Length: 194
Image (cartoon, rainbow, N blue to C red; front, side):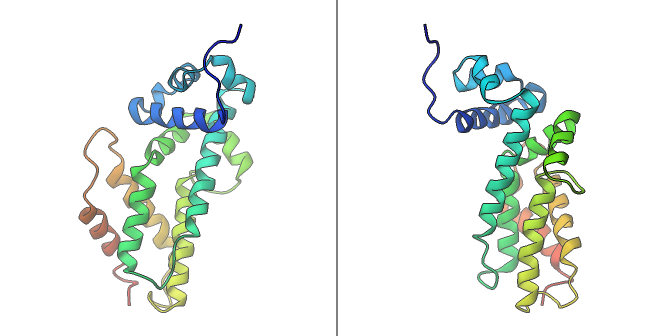
């Protein structure tokens, strides 16, 4: 006899459930049982679709990285206020579940190992990907003359990500104001703006 409810897009429902658990309980509260309870399905559903819980978590992080990369196509260099655009990107990245995902990646060795196998390179997955998105945007702005020709966008971008992460890191407190994020972005970019 079947149990639970029929799930149409199992991966998406499990990923969304995992994000809700992460936002509510943090990385230490994220277990396969918590995810399946949040998704209102049997625990076996997760294990039918993923080799194990770390495979599920790796797929979740990679899915969120792909979403971030898809959003990068929406960034239009040369339009709008550059500092405001950077502040909006940082707010979008860190007001989502990204702060908890970065903590999760740091917290789970096997997850980090799987992500490095899937996406070799330095840094923490998702945070590094967000820095790459920002660096590409800043490079396009530099090419248009809105940043100094010698602006080191490969240093500016991770600096912005690190400072943004620090602003948003307290998942239990109030998020920073739009003005605080904008001020931080303006300060980091001050020497490069034209």
